[in-house]
Length: 376
Ligand SMILES: Cc1ncc(COP(=O)(O)O)c(C=O)c1O
Image (cartoon, rainbow, N blue to C red):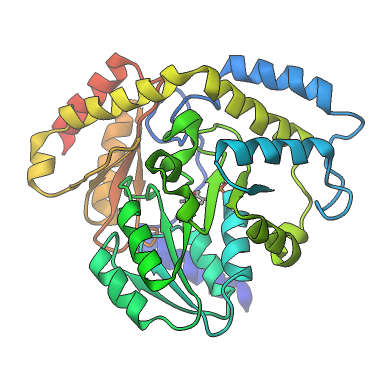
């Protein structure tokens, strides 16, 4: 009796025009990947990784176990130390992915009687994390400091505020300085997901909190490497106590095979590479300014543009059918732009998510502007 039930669920998705399918992009212009800095496709970085891997690989392809058993090495500890220097933290802890890092922190730290107060637009992995916690939880309105303060007043036990530097489906930025002040006022602990600002903001890609000089006031920061850094994995940065606690209590860290040495080498090489290439961040910010300057005015006038200084640029198009149609029109021009459907975002808040990259050429940008003008 299970399969008919599952099939019914799939049918409902198809009827809502929200059925997800795995597709492969071929011969299209990339305006949809998170490879903002082009590191995922950098031959130069790939060669550097190859050379370092030859030095470090030893006799193992995989890591052979959990970090607490056979999956640890001097090399991993050294890379964590380097990351701690970069992110200006007492310690960092490598995680297999940002998803794992977020689940680890929220499932392990807030306890029964504590309160998690989260921005309503936080990523699914953070939501998954609080679902695994016994703490109370409620959302505050997106980037709304007044609502956050109201919720802070209602919180009980230890208070945790959860936010992202750059929101993944909106591209906008959290008012971090003000949030830090509010957290200090109510003794709350800020948990900050820097997934989309890792590599793209701050000195040598060390994210928004470091760029603003408020990193020491944040309880836990999560940096992910699968987006701007073009590779895979993540780390948590914070105090020694935070990291020692996660090593002891974070189940998604403890009960999983550690990243293989190739991934660790890639993390080291990608950050070293970025340090040598400050022009990448400069090029990316020029692309962002260019996009904003060339966005058709009617989109702004109709209130469909989400203000963003990040490589994620969003145009709202209400309705799954409508947004899918628009994306198909853009794809017919060989522009790979994907529609973000409900339920990934709220119904009525469907959108085109356009990602800008250092490697997008002037001609590709022109084609994008012309096509947005034509179809929107
Ligand atoms: C804001 C945010 N946090 C965390 C993650 C998960 O990171 P990872 O892809 O490394 O698992 C994502 C990825 O989609 C994200 O957008």
